[in-house]
Length: 97
Image 1 (spheres, rainbow, N blue to C red):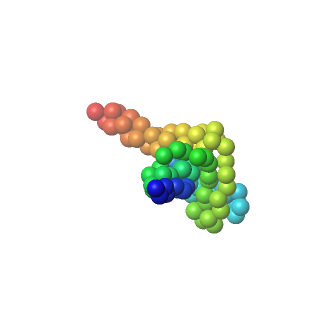
Image 2: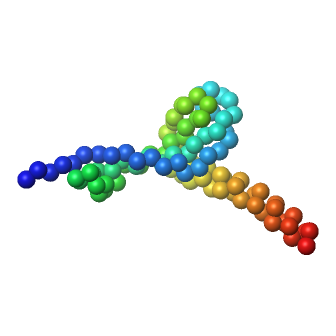
């Protein structure tokens, strides 16, 4: 019987923020990425093997590993920043009526 197994890496962009890059020291878009390495059996991801949180600069391409708690905080910060313009538009619409 032939058993095919291996590993596969999947990456997901959780948020994008405007931050100062750790490498090039310029303000640039930073992607918060969660990378999960899976154990695969017959090319089907079965068990998550390891997780890493990364921060990637859009300007220079530098990738740095960050703590999962810091990644969660950055994602919350991005979600709050995305909700602010919506709240401002809703408040302006309520004032006009």
